[in-house]
Image (cartoon, rainbow, N blue to C red; front, side, top):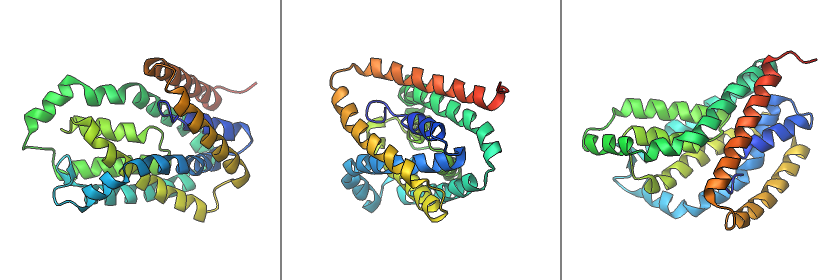
Length: 252
């Protein structure tokens, strides 16, 4: 799923919970298991990201990338600590809403960021962009979400930036990857240091994810992108519904 359209946590997280891992350690373990794959994707853009960070005029929505990265890292740390502090029973009730947010992002975020309306807004703003405090505040919130759960956070960032005036989506790939990798790196370090990772299950998922990434890349050459997108949305919507049932309907 990650290789084809994103949403891999909709497979790894349910699999870990089904294997008997409590939801909070399962979420932390899922983040760690998917991290190498995300890092491999980030390597594709590393030269572009390094050039952006080193440039005088590197910015998104009028804010320097260095500042965006700093608040993303702080947000990622805050989100990971918040997850580790959340009682399991509370997280079980929060989780379906997080899955719903990620499902909506997978289904609609790219459409929002590519919409003609969003592009016209960005063009009209031109020199007058959103206040830097608003951009940084929203980026911090996205960093918190990335550290706490992280599903489809990259799509959420691109959609948010598009609504705030950035409409060159291709140019946002490197900043998006940089921000997501930063939030994930901080979260992974926090989870490992806190001892929240269930390593036997995590390593099994990691190996499966690596094999799936290879197979997904090959499958992507055969299956039309629209078909894979529909399949992913159906899967994520189904998983979200199951987790709502698990959290809010009495068992037995």
